[in-house]
Image 1: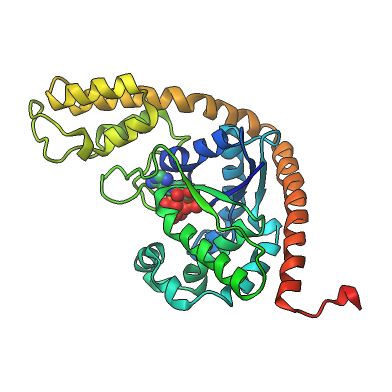
Image 2: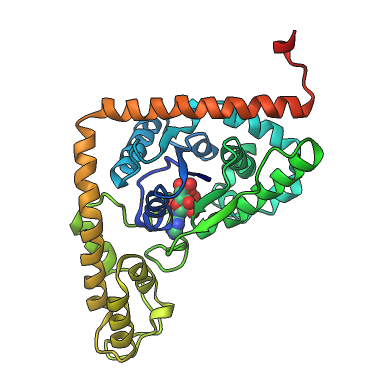
Amino acid sequence: MKRIFSGIQPTGEIHIGNYVGAIREWVRLTEDYDCIYCVVDFHALTVEYPVDEMAKRTLDTAIVLIACGLTPEKCKLFIQSAVPEHTELAWIFNCVTPVGDLERMTQFKEKARQHRGNVNMGLMDYPVLQAADILIYKAEFVPVGEDQIQHIELSREIARKFNGRFKPLFPEPQVILSRAPRILGLDGKSKMSKSLNNYIGLLEEERTIWEKLRTAVTDTNRVRRYDPGNPHLCNVFTIHTAFSEKGLLEEIERDCRSARIGCIDCKRMLFERIIEEIAPIRERVEEIKKNVDYVFEVLNTSALKCREIAKRTIDEVREALGLLSLKKG
Ligand code: AQP
């Protein structure tokens, strides 16, 4: 089986963009691939965060992932900081990565703008650690949202540079994009993000989900109820494409364009579809929370297995680099 790696940061509440852009796809891929998934807590250190909430956020993120279907029978799920070989490989990759490549990264530029007072080295180095996360397992595929495509291209570049200079140890990983790779926030402008207050949380109460959807920006050219709308300029319709089946999408497209339905009707249908899909996840979250020992067991067992793989890769890398091996005496 070919191997997949992907990760999510414990930076806050998991939202429907993370779910349809990544997590739901991660679950589907467990059918055909050897999947390794990770809560990337070291990545989350690159921005300011409430220190006393980090452990809880990390655990809560893992619980949601398990509730979404990433169970130990289907994949490995662990916490990044439990496998320190990731950061060891990141240092080595730093030595083959031009600074200019990192300065060009769109996410770095955006995050540097958002966090002007804290543009730290880790923020710029984020994609190098990401390359190490993937390549320490020699993963060939990385299911991510559209925002991560540039980083995975850099991972390929890093693999190429290492392979060319030292020894061909690493595959060049490919992106797997989901059916909904880019969900915008409720303002219809920027990407839906945990750290921007523009999201619908997977575990939010139905009442607040409806409140947020009700006021979400749609096609801005559609001013009055009887103006015809253009679904392809509407973020609510984009979210529909992630939650609704083909028949309903065709019906909405037709009725929106002819103004037979208004935005509020479209939003009501979307609300029902979202609730239908996420209700079982929320129930499972409540169940899993009653047995946190199980979650620790899952995370520990996976971390041990992943560490074995990671150590083997690091041994090969050290040899390729020509480092003195104390094992040989
Ligand atoms: N809006 C989105 N639409 C589609 N996919 C998305 N992803 C994130 N936002 C969207 C995908 O979710 C996975 C996990 O993301 P992450 O936590 O590693 O970091 P991120 O991309 O930076 O996500 P956020 O929510 O925007 O977090 P913050 O606010 O902390 O930066 C990735 O595969 C991502 O593509």
